[in-house]
Length: 386
Ligand code: FE2
Image (tube, rainbow, N blue to C red; front, top):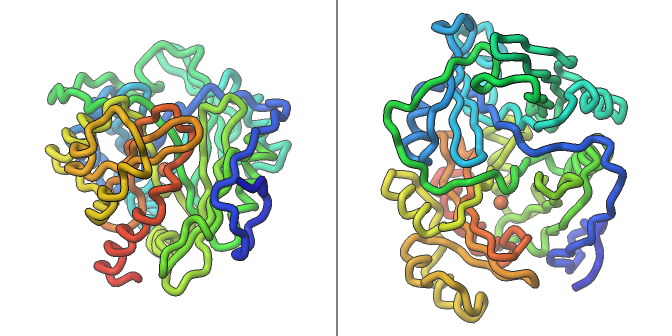
């Protein structure tokens, strides 16, 4: 495999050049993803969807009943994953404008830190655009320290220090014991969060994560690896110093027709979070349950499974179960992974989820990209957008 990490030209034949991450000084140590907040049109109904379909548990709520006048927020958890779904209660709020422009979407990929002021100052000193200055939000059970910077599009990263807080989620929230008692579906933690950015902007955001947050580039997929007859994209995966946080950045590449990334950018009206990958250690059980609960997944053509045994070799799982559920498999030098992608989770063809089970492999399923993109384009064509 050729080591060529900066080449992004269409003539490049590099398929997926892995690099040994150089270890820069971690001027901004991150503990992990604290939560991901979505701005949505109707958080009450969205919460029901994530609880029923994805097995999340409602743990906290803030809204008029708790003294918050302009919004309602539902905090959902499963394993280490925490989602916050927020709706505006009137047209004046910034949340309402965000939903008007983008539809339902991920607003804040919040990062847990020891010191939100130090993280904010380090990020701003390295060129981040500030959104919210470091603030202590006080409550009866302590205080949360929070600060926010801008990333691609209207998306932000908050830094959250909850070391001085012992209550439920954050001051202003009350605990909610989920009345449905839905059992989880086995989702454990966030594996990666992918951003789509405009044509030509990928390297700018790769630089942003390197310079501002001290991330390093893990892998690069060029348009030779990720192209079909019609469309193409390029992607670079950035990760933090600990390797716990992975943020791939996609941009569209020139193709015969509109790429899936362009379709996203058209309907999201700009850059934003494309998909969130969630880890399970039993993908067959997780996906079976999610399908029974009505979550729709992308299906690749049946021929995929005819070729799979040769490509994947010996794996623990029963190939017929993978085929029945539409789960994909890929192998790299470290092992294999199993993955599947939901259909979009709102009417606009924007945000979707990935469910992933890793058996050693640290990659992103490059061997599945073509089959997946053919499946994606079939859906895109049905929407009249190819
Ligand atoms: Fe992914």
